[in-house]
Length: 288
Image 1 (cartoon, rainbow, N blue to C red):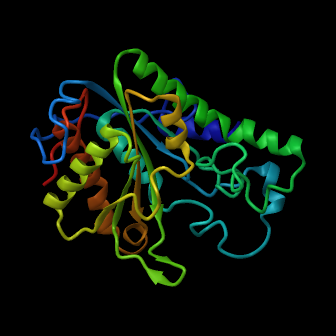
Image 2: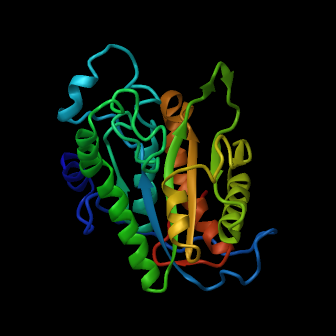
């Protein structure tokens, strides 16, 4: 349970292993955007829940012997999502939202894959005996999944709509090709709330920073296997799950631009929530 304890110490208590980041801010900008269903979400109380499934590249001592080879398998994207945990913290602080994350590398067990998925364990750990793999799940997979589920369930039981923001990042160059997009918003097009929220968020980002290339359901499909997808199955209503994907070129090559995104993305999400009518208890100031 080492990762759970480290997460709690890092973010403060919330009643779960990953902790929460409190924050304050005035209400986001009101308004309505074309494409948002009028009145469908108007006046609904909403809580934001933030997660980061690939927040670090820490190797637990029980499997350290498997990661002794040289190379960038841990330092690169295969090990973790650069900048994703910092971004997740910005959302948690802005919305006074619980934040659940792991700093154990996805090469031990991938928090964003379902049990039984071919990539749930990596080439380093999939060959371990069954008992050892189960021990890794107990220590480094189930706690975050369980605590996130409990937070979402509790909010919905109180009559709230949950907006789940899962923070991720992607590499600027993939298979030799430069990716020109800057920000991806992943959602399920069959779910009206997610579709409306991402349309509003994309419009707010375009208004604030038109030079950014923002795409929906890219560079990955929003319905692929993942933490958000699993929660959609559990909650057919009152749950809006969005996976945020940010180009790693910002955090790796242009720190000032990344710092700007850390402020811009929560602020424009607050505006988008207001655009579709959701009312959050704590929202960040409008973007400037």
